[in-house]
Length: 131
Image 1: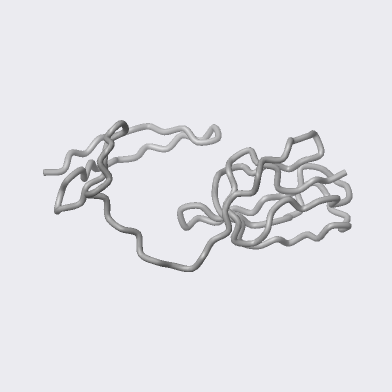
Image 2: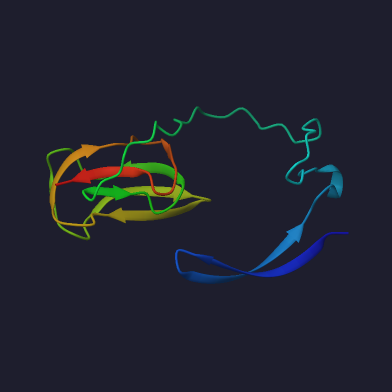
């Protein structure tokens, strides 16, 4: 029988109350706990479309807009050389089927776009350089 737990989680300063169900080994599924070395019982991932992987890390500076979360770049709305205003949408990211519009952190010129559509990025990774 699955166990449920009520948890309070804080993400980027916003508090969420969630109920989590432990489905370890329930109905033939097996989700190993950290430290388990056996992967023989893990469900096999279905073959799907290729997705770009995260690029090599770029050193972040004050002119860089950083990824607010880990996820996938869905759409880039700015181009290198564009003039942008603070708060202007520059790209859209998706994580767990939720989209987030990423906006310019300051007014200026887009000097470099460090990501591409369908690319996976880590939280804190530079996305765009605006000078």
